[in-house]
Every structure is written in structure tokens, then in C-alpha cells.
Image: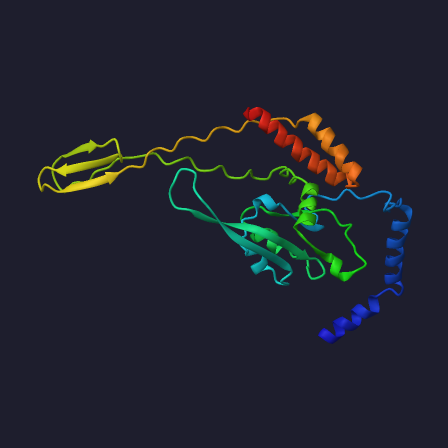
Length: 268
């Protein structure tokens, strides 16, 4: 039965049907206008999630080595040293890691994005920049200074799509409760001002139980939103352009300097 059905289907096939379908697709494409961009005179406006190049924000790096350990190509190179800082108000001295070198070899990188995902301190970002080709293979090893420049070209994340669920709000701080449990009878509670401890005495058995309550944390001061200092922005932008810095990188550096200047003025 199966052989007869296959033979009947072969007999029904119209010769040249596949060729007609292909010509139909070709005709549809021929009648549409061309959308080719005249690169490099016209550069594409890439989306924020474009995997162009990995940028580094050095101020956020804590030298945890998670990115270099998770990299499947071993193309992330990190060097650091420890420094001991004496506390200002007394106490035990603390050692801090200082980043000496952070380099990525893009001749080995396969742009998987694992280093960006595992970074717990938002020190690595995807930048849509793609014009960093070199004639020498060794020139694709970029140090932290070049990676920092690319961080100024990182675009903000896109807005939520229509119908998407908003991110969950942080849970409120738990309320401080004092509780005392007794075997029998009534309990008498007493609190102390130093450690906010409550003790309860069981009237029947004479047993004591201590419940320590944590002091409520003081709310953090709200952040003051400031506008960038336009004078500082114009000055830094003009200086960077005069040095030959690309326009997008110069805009990022000028905006950062303008925001820092505005925050200093707001803090007095």
C-alpha cells in the first residue's frame, strides 16, 4: 500500500513547479527598493544588545578573577597586587587588591559573552563598536586603557516591551519583633538600651530566655539628581576632539566629567 501511494504522489507532481516557486521569490525581491547602506559613509544604527566588542569599566572591577576563570578561550589576562590600608578610625588594617593589568586578546575571543554574564560588579559590558580591525595579529591584544575608552560607547539598555512584567521590587525590611516563650504561667519582659535585649521569666518553672532584637537600620540618604555641567562638557569635548579622539568617545568622556563636576557642586 505504501509503495502505491508513493507512486501516485510522484505521478501528481507537476514538472517545473519548483522552478516557478524560485522565480516567484526572485521577482518579489526585484520589485522591492534596495536597502543597502553606503558604508563607511553611512554607518548603521546598531541596537544596544549588539555584540560588538567587550568594554571595561575599571572603577567597578574588584579583581575577583571570575571573568578570566570562566573564559573558555583563556583570552582574559589580569594582573594585580595587594596593598594594606590603615583604617582612619583605628582597628585592623585591610588589604585591597589593586588592578595592574586587564587585557583581552580579541584574536582568541569567540564573543560568547560569558565574562560579561559572570561579572558580579558590572565591570564588563557589550559595546556596539566594531571598527577595530588590525593588520597585525598581535595588535588585537587590547589593554585596559583601550577597553575603558569603549565603555563610553555602551548604549543604555532598551526599554521594556509592551506587556512585559516590570522587575520585582526589593522586599521591605523585616519588622523587629520581641517574643518570649514560656513553659507555663505568665512572662515578664525587660529591655536594655545597649543591646536591645529582652528577657522573660517563667513564673512556674523559673526559667529565663533572652531574645535579642536588632536595631533598626537608618534609611539611606536619597540620591540627588543633577544635570551635567554644560561648561565642563564643552571644554572636555573640545580638548578630546583636538587630541584626535573619536567623536563618540569624546562625548562619553565629556559627559562623565560634566556629571562629576555637577555632583561636586551639589555636595557643596
